[in-house]
Image (tube, rainbow, N blue to C red; front, side, top):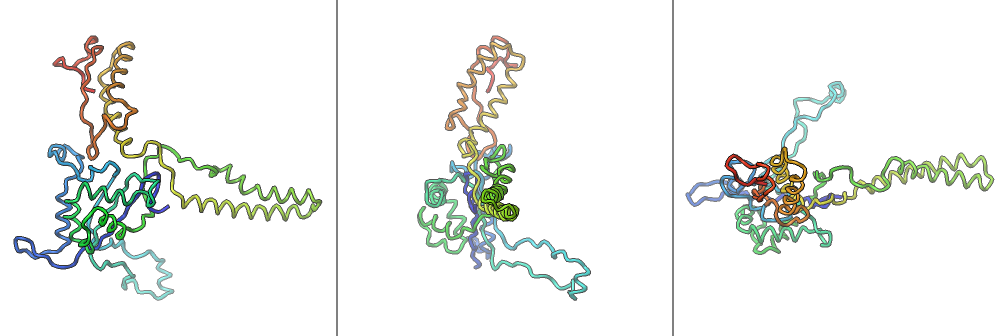
Length: 336
């Protein structure tokens, strides 16, 4: 299904960039595309490296607790991938001159591209697109104004609702989404190999059996062939229908659950390092204390903040570790 897959909404937005020649405060004549690129370049990124972590700044899109990934860039022209490959002999037969270029796409203006995926809302008519856009505006109005002011049609945007309308007008259908939260094969009822074979053969068996039951022996073969053809068509129709449907949401694939999983993963790595060589009783007690501090079943707290690659340390006093001399060089409590 376009735009929706695996419990996520995949939004692709193309906003036309203005083509005039604005003058900056310093009197420099430039283009809206250049100014837009500067705005995008000045946006804080996610805390993905030691350099970005040390700045203390984080991407404004991290304020939304539904957004998994978001990317914005300016598209001037589509990439030219070269000529379509054609057999040289066919070129000779068709009398095609290889020095004459083939048709290629050209854009009339630069376009601002926004590509994102966020947790959908199945109970909303548009599956959560409008509420997401309104939430983005509410949290990042200043950044959105600085970016989209260089795009056509944004002059009428003055509220969260009008911004959601603008997003809907600029949306293009997403037909090739990327969703990597399923740990295995999604449940596809009726699409196993045995299930498909049974669906294909069942009409043949039914028609052949009916012919034999009525005493039409010679018609049994014709009935079997006809039933097999009908069964194959039904299987093709099933595959076509299922292929257009969205995958169901993967377990715990919403953003709060993903952030909690990252938090638990990191805290458990520290825990495993700290308890090396501990006896069974002390390990059991320490693990219980770790569970009470991390609370894996609580997706809200403690957890990893959006837009960062590591959680803040959680310091837990562990008398069992101290008794077994499992402390650092300065005798401090182990950080978990």
